[in-house]
Length: 329
Image (tube, rainbow, N blue to C red; front, side, top):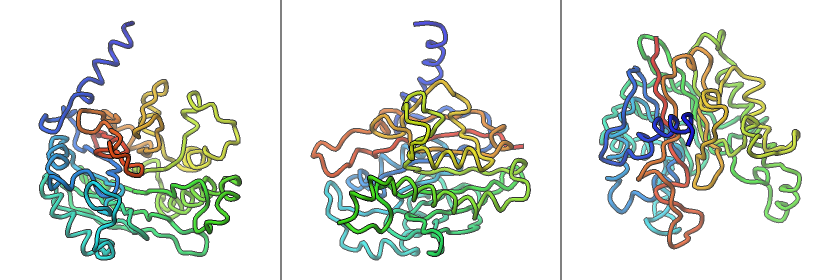
């Protein structure tokens, strides 16, 4: 093992072995972000009343958490939907549930993003949260399939904008009837729809800013898309539609892919497989504040395929969390 690989291993060891009860080492910044797609409202946590989940989150010592797929959907250990699924979709029910959950790991404030279905995003925080916008699309030029949100907090007397999203997950396009889905897949309409969603979200958030390069903006979520920054691994053709979403973000917005920029020669899966489809972007001003950024894989977060092979469920989630430390001036 050469020196560089030894050094990388030493850097990664704290992330690899931080379990539910062990405090995650923290860099001396003033903002720690934790993002995670928790798969069906942490379906894996129902059996123990979310004790492992909240203990692990508390150990991360995050100031802001962003949860994707933040609504319970299925009964524990099954693919059977909850009896009161319609009630769970209401803003009041979800917000009240997350206030109770967040209090268990030390967060007082909750923001629920806009959502059309059972897959919302939620922001919890130690700082008061201003809900700027809840994005679901206007139906004329775009529908944001799972919804998106724009929240704002104040850190060191500076506004920090937080944009959350979860794009359309299918290879066929949104609202395509069953009998037409194979044609839609062949035409890559799912990829093209994700690009449409991304353009809509950015036009209504970051692209409304007067001086975005000088402002603190972050955007994160389950993009369900591959990035050209990692095409040295994927080897997709230059015109592959799977690259459309991140081509837009990297080429038409001020955002920087934090992990790819910091470690251009490394690739970290954000799923149970080998794909990285979860990203955290930041504007230049905020990127310059980053102290540490990593995909967290430890004894708790490492995805394990459900032993009963239930649907595509993994435990605790089919995604891995991302943790970033900032020192905001």
